[in-house]
Every structure is written in structure tokens, then in C-alpha cells.
Image: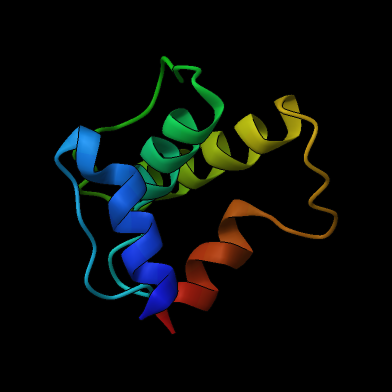
Length: 88
């Protein structure tokens, strides 16, 4: 609950909140928005309302690429693996 409260405090400026850490981040949108807030940089291309699995995977891929661009090492993590881990 502490992590969710912290995330929500960061995302309040974007009008976004999450309730469930597993289901509310599975499409990548909240993760991208959180990273934008924390880094003060904007990610241009992503699906703001993803409906299909490919769009969700794309968002998670963009999120992971954004992390790498910011110099954050995330060895062994892929969009596909993240999505299936979250959905299971």
C-alpha cells in the first residue's frame, strides 16, 4: 500500500491513480507517466489507451527503452516477460 500511495502522489499531477499494482500497470501507461514525472522528460510515442495486447506490449517496450535511455540498467527484462508475469 505504501508503494501505491507513493506512485499516486507522483501521478496526481497527471490526474492518474492506481489501486492495484498488478492490474493497473499492465498496459504500461501508468509506468510511462510515472517515469515522465520522475525524469521530467516526455516520451512521445506510446498508446495512451491501449486495447490490444500488442499495444500493451509496445507500451511496456517503450517504458523499458525509456529506462535504458535514462541510464537505468534492467538486464534480463523484456516487455513480453513483464506482461505475462503481470497477467498471470
